[in-house]
Image 1 (cartoon, rainbow, N blue to C red):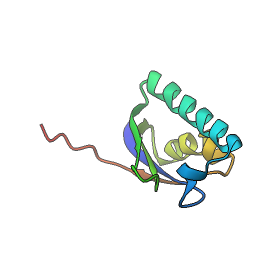
Image 2 (image 1 turned 135 degrees about the vertical axis):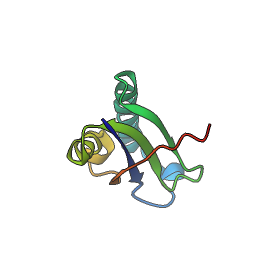
Image 3 (image 1 turned 90 degrees about the vertical axis):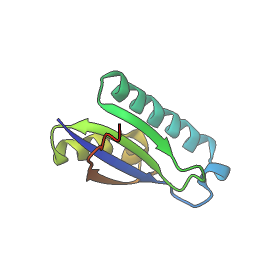
Length: 95
């Protein structure tokens, strides 16, 4: 397994402040999806910029195609709410 990131971008700059009920429900499904990947040992960590400009998922996959499939299956991405970019990623241990 290799490490990857996927970065998601919201549909508008003020998304956090103007999220609709339907979008909030979809983002809830997004979070449940990530929790499932974490429980399966695939996701190392997730987070978002404080201002809401982007979210980031650091996870494991067999290869780039598998990583793209993981990102594409995210409910927020699959529904077209969030734009996504997937990249190979090297975690550096600073310890």
